[in-house]
Length: 225
Image (cartoon, rainbow, N blue to C red):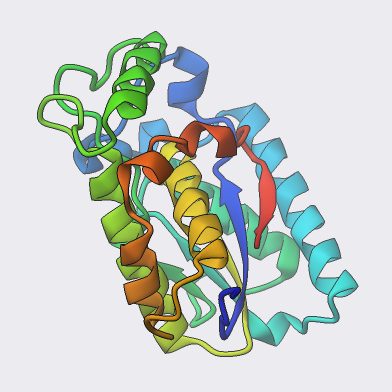
């Protein structure tokens, strides 16, 4: 079977941010929403290019701008990215077509990684590959993030119908989202038509531990399924 979704989905990792430029981990909601951690100049350019690319995708699929919804993480770098995309599409950012969703926030990597070198990501991903149910100390595991993203997808599906949804989020959450969505699309057991149930069924270690195969570059736009 394949997933019968009411909407079509694209994902966008935020453009190159000031934390990316500085090479530091900014993953807590307190730090992530600080204005000084928004997009770097290169990231602004990436966000604008992503907006142009998304507009072309909409035109190629004959999707009217009225049917576009932009759902984004509350972090400064994702909010900044979503604003530039909305501008390219000529959609009012403070209108009903753009929605901030808290559960699209960055994966929290814990106090032992926060504001330190992003070289430490390798340690986290090694831990994920061994056991995606165990996160870095004080931080979120892959399973934790998968759970909140699955809930978000179910909510979006219940709220909108016949829309093109652009999900603007972060590297790890978007890797994990793709992992569960692709697994759900291949899920063979006809246990339920309920998206939340199907997404819950695929949140098992052998699937979740593979999330790095869906890595995105900053500013990368991708169609999901």
